[in-house]
Length: 422
Image: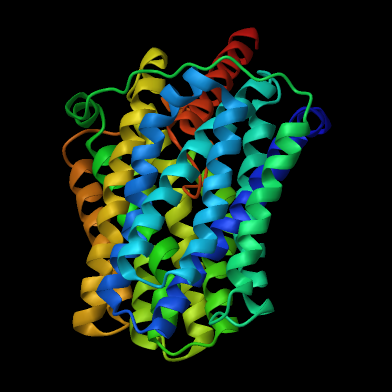
C-alpha cells in the first residue's frame, strides 16, 4: 500500500479533487434546475447529456493521448471542466446546460481514461489490486465529500459553482508537479457486441439495465430530492447514502461471489435492490425510510457492476477479457444515456415516485432475465470461476476495466500455481 501511495499519490489526490467537483456539479444542477423553474424532463436531458459525452470521451480519449500525451490531455480537459462549471450559473439556459453537460461528460471520461492508464503503469503485478482498491476508495470518498460541501452555501448563488471549479483546477497541480514518468498508452480493440452476447447474455443485458439504474442514481437523485421538496441537507445526505451503501456491501457480495453460482447471486442482489426501490416508492415520504432505500439501492447496484463483469469473465479466455471490457463499458454507457431520460419522463407523468418506479422496472427485468438464463445454460463449478474484483461505476472506463481484468487474470493464475504447488 505504501509503495502504491508513493508512486501514485499525485494521481490519486488529483482524482479525489476531480471526483469532489463532479459529485458537486451533478447534485447542484439538480437542485438549481428546480430553483430556475426547469421541468423534470428538461433536467433529465441535462443529466443524460453527461453520459452521452462520457461515452464519446471514452472512445476518443485514446487517440488524443497518443497524439499529445497524458499530461496535456489531463491539463487541457480539466481546465475546460473548470470553465464549464462557471458557465452554468452565468447562462441559466437549458440548451446551454445540456451542451455544458455533454462537454463535461466528455472531459471527465477522457480524464479518467488518462488517470486509469497512468495508474496501471504506476502499479506492478504485486500492487495492482491495492491500486484498484485505493482508486475505488478515492472515487467514493470524493462523491461523499462533495455532498458534505453542498451545504456550505446557497445553491441559488454562485459560490457552490465556484467551489468545484476551483477544486478541478487544483486537481491539475499535483499531476503536473509529479516526477512520475508518463506511461506508454495502448488500448485493446473491443469485442463485437454480437460475440459478447453469445459469450454472456446475462453480462450484456445486465450491464445495459445496470447503466440505467446507475444513471438514475447518479444523475437524477438530486432532481428527485428537489421535486420531492427535500432540503439541501436532506438531498446531499440522500445522494451520499447511495455511495456509502456501495462501499459497505461491495466486499461481502464479492466474498459470496467466489463461493456460489454468480447468476443466482445477481438475481438475489437485484432483488434486494428492488426491495430498496419499493421502499422508496411506497415509504419515501419518511426521510429515514428514504435513506434506507438509497442504502439498499446503492449497496446493490454498484457491486452488481463487478459481479456482472466477473460472471462474463467466467466464460472468456484470458486473451479475450480486455476486448470484452470495452464492449461491456459501451453497453453500460448506452443504458446510462437512456436512464435519466426515461426517469425524467416517468417523474413528469407519475410525480417524484416515478424515480423509484423506473428502478423497480429495471431491477425486475434483471431478476427475470437472469433467472431465465439459469434454465438455458448450466452453471460452472465454483472452482472453475475467476476472481471477483471490486469496482465502481462512478469513474470507470474501458481502460479501468482492463486494469481490473489484468488483476483478475493474475490472481487466477496465481491461485492455479498455488494449487499445483500444493
